Every structure is written in structure tokens, then in C-alpha cells.
Image (tube, rainbow, N blue to C red; front, top):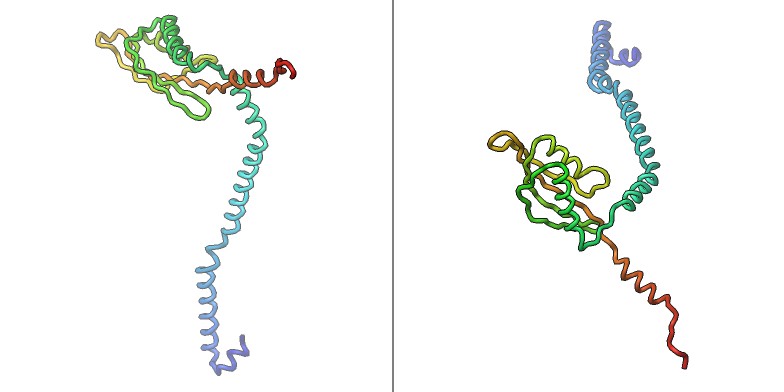
Length: 201
């Protein structure tokens, strides 16, 4: 550095001035471009630790896939199979039976609407019920209790005009498994497995 300044034929004061300007320029460049990135390593390490944590969680969940599949298969196997022709009757009779047991007065019932997909047939019905609070809570709880196929999808409650009972509009949903044509398949298998009784010619 000194040799380079000597070639410029600068006086001592000018040399000191050039060195001071160089130092200031060096500090400005570092403050502008280098110092703001001092925390990049810490931030990168924090992101890396977060990614590794997520990776461990995902790997742990992936290891649970066989258990989840077994649980789903068990729940599907436990689902009650109600014949197609009995589903709507089963839906309505369950509601009526629980109504009488809980002491709830169903004042009106809407039309039963079916919806279907590849695995389930879903029946939806809206009812209006009138009762006291304990009876209504018991009615709604018992409808979905245990292995019941009925669930409450929507509920609005208001007091009746005398303000002695509650009037509830309840949307009930029941999901039934689609029954495969087992009887037809079994009949076909039985017929094909029976030996021919025709006399040999």
C-alpha cells in the first residue's frame, strides 16, 4: 500500500487522507453489504432445524399408515349393513323410537333426501321437535350414541311462545354402507360349483 502511494507522488498529508478515505469506504461497504448478513447463518440453522423437525413428524406419521389402514378396515367391517329396501324405514323408525323414549314431541318431519357416493348412501331429513331442555338433549345425544348410524348435522333452537319449552329444527343424517350384490354373486358361484346332473350320452 505504501509503495503504491509513493508512486503517486503524494505528500504525507495526502497519503493519510487517501488511507482515511479508503478505510471509511471499506467500513461503508461492509456496513452496507456484509454486516446485514451476519444473522444469515443463525436463520439458516433455525430453518434447517425446523425442516428436520417436520421431516421427523412426517416420517413418524408415515410409519403409522399400516395402523391407520387396519383401523379403517376395522371400522368399515363394524359398520352395520342395512339392506337398501330397509334403510329409509330404519332411519325413520329409529327417530320415532328415540322420540318416544326421550319424551320429545316431533311436530313435523321433512322429506327424506338420499345422497350417494361410491361407498355410502346418505339419508337426510329435517324434523321439528318440541320439548323441555333435558328431553331434547337426551334425544339428540341418544340418536348418535354408540353404533348409531344417525348424526345431527344442523340444529337451531328457540323458545316456544309461552316460553315453557324449546322448539328445535334438527337436520339428521344417516350413512349406510352400500351393499355389494353378494346374493347374486353367491348364487352364481353356487350354480357354477354344482356338478351337472344331465345324463351322459
